[in-house]
Length: 211
Image (cartoon, rainbow, N blue to C red; front, top):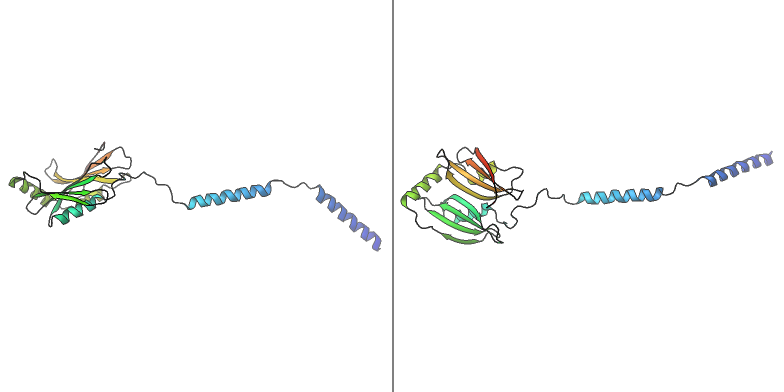
């Protein structure tokens, strides 16, 4: 009984061996898996990097913002209030903030601040200011209840770039308004807003080419 059982087992093993030998391997499966794994790792590494900036930087040479120029001008003339701040020589490597502030009696003082590093360049009192001029300036400044930075906050939006000018003036209603000029992220235009200096309402918006 032992002989036939052994013989049958051997025949089964032989058939299994022949089937194994006859099976064709699937080629390339290991290489494809490695390639896919490498691609996934590369994709993951790429995702970990910083996302690209959605917009180019506006006025990259202007590292000292308008707020710094305004603070320096107000410090130069204690007790004064802002009348205007304008970015000049924009196309030069070293543009300048030209700021005008009004003293308590309405006298205007002009303060120049370098717009790259924020260095004070000089302070002067413009000539030709009459008593009537000073009175008009004092009245205008006293009419403004909204700070200039609050007016800027009212006009910020998706295309907001950098402030290039702010000026306090009378509008057609003879009401005090802040004129806010913004160089947008498009680099090809500026937005000019009129903001009520009492209510903070945005009264007007215009688009124009940069100066």
